[in-house]
Length: 202
Image (cartoon, rainbow, N blue to C red; front, side):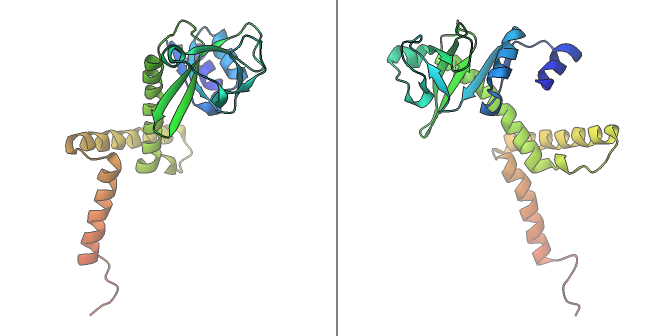
């Protein structure tokens, strides 16, 4: 919520939708985004309780909902437990892989395409992928400096390293991990053949 408030009231950045993962999909935050007049796309946990019968039946876990062909294509309107009675969201069942299905909640009831919901959520995955690669490959979290300026310089250098690795990965048809660990592998082979610090002196 603090990140959103910073975007809206301090940086005044224009945006239309908020993409988040299940960790942030709380009633409080979803309703706050509603109040900002923004859309959200967020996957809900499989055990989240919802009602798709307009109050005719009890709440049930999302994973137990039944879906017809039209609903699989266009989504279904549901009420999430503890939301106001009149507050509904559009729920989409998105097949991510053969062994994974996501349930995406959107507060834009006019959205009627599972394919569009899936494409938007793929953008979020790109951001997640960027964060993971940045942390695992560039040492961005290893800065021990206290001054803000030096910390920002460190972050900028880490991002430049990531950009260079990504560029090399695209050009060589490898993953960014293969590029990084290939460098370490080449160095290790070279050191085993001709070590800079020999263990024994002849």
